Amino acid sequence: MTTGRLGQAAAPPNAAYAGQVVHFPDPVRAARHPRGVRVDAGGYPEFSPYARAVAEIADPPEGFGVDELRLTDYVSANAALSASGHELWDTVPAVATPHGWTWHHVAGSRRMELVPVEVKALLRHHGGISTAVVDQGKRGTRPLQETRPVHFGLPKSGVAVTEQQVQGVEEDLGYRLPGAYRSFLKAAGGCAPVGTALDAELGLLVDQPFFTVREEAAVNDLVYVNKCLRDHLTKDYLGV
Image (cartoon, rainbow, N blue to C red; front, top):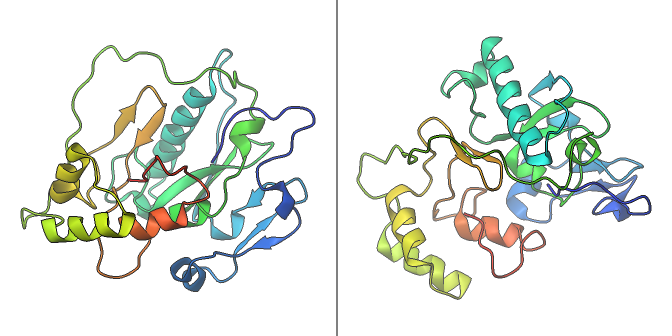
């Protein structure tokens, strides 16, 4: 999702789809979600039909930035649903988001909906974050007093992705992967952080599995996902 408050004359990203249903352009998601996503008259996507859970979050404190809002809203919603005994939180920490799911802020409200990651990624869009009464120009979170490295639970086989598979990815992408990410992909492709992690500079909660390499098209395959994200990222970025 994009962020930043809209100017008075500006329209939300993809407002051209207002009042229409947008269907998934790739075969995997189109088969899994044939209904597509409806965009309301204001240009905001309606993910409610896909919501597995909802949460109503209190208004943020004065002086909050947009990234602080997103982070604390996610943690608060996760904690509330975990405390309620929701089945999706059976295998993840209380403040983490269930794997394969993400929260969507409903525009003009403090309502949050838990929707599949692959569905929310259909459109670059504005949601409730852009309509929230916070400092939209204040980015990142407050400096952490203490930092610790993130740990990943590695596969028992010892190798998540083989060298041959990595070379196949590089052939499909048309360039060699950065060395550090290459090593990470082979060791922990498809794995998630143990517990949760935080990117304080971007204000992002990191609690989802990273992409891996699959033999068939899939929404967690590194090559397939990046083809789906071509209108989200410029060519100098790789979704991982």
